[in-house]
Image 1 (cartoon, rainbow, N blue to C red):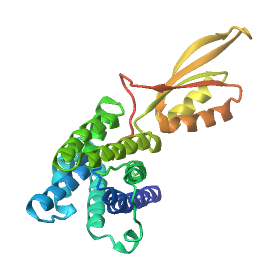
Image 2 (image 1 turned 180 degrees about the vertical axis):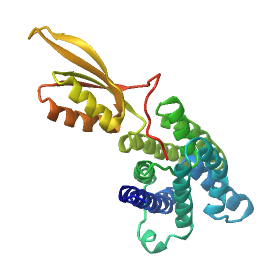
Image 3 (image 1 turned 90 degrees about the vertical axis):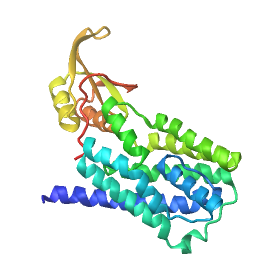
Length: 291
């Protein structure tokens, strides 16, 4: 295995294991303290656990329920998204599940929250941070995240808001079966997690770049080398200077945009760059393979 590939593999493992620890810690502290239902398959797992204990007096481990729920999405991911992506995601699911059930309580017992709103807000932020670490490792935390990644790649749109809408159904069931206030606090938790995730991870967001430059060839080469995205060159005339200049048009991922702007300014300090948020694209748009 080449040195670069070993480094990338080690980085992925480190991010996934760190995300697993944070994910499990969040469930055992913020989520349990507020009796929250996070949404997604994690929330569904906790809801099933609570129902089994309340109505049957049976405590079912988190891992048994969560692994069962993730079996079908993992199969879909393995077939349609990528084998390595799915294997690393399953590592996240396995590690976070085991840690949730067996995480030492010596730290958890020292953390007590008496404000459910604080637990919902900060728990949502911590949840988003854990998931973003997995996404940076080209993996996911499983469940609805498998579905979100699949549709995001197929339709090239940010789908986390749609997942949030689906989670509301789970929260409505929790409100009906238990108490409404916990369900409403859980909505705050999920909303905070969704908004925080769009801040932490922008891999599925796009930015449109309009670049006015006197060095179009060098800038085009840079964009293709750094992002593998194409560039369209337009002829332009500065009406103030009366000089002919090239206007370059390109759509790149949000995570690449700021890095490209910095490097373009080094190539052509006199360039003028307009960066716009792109809602969606139709046509060929390069997406880095998961494997």
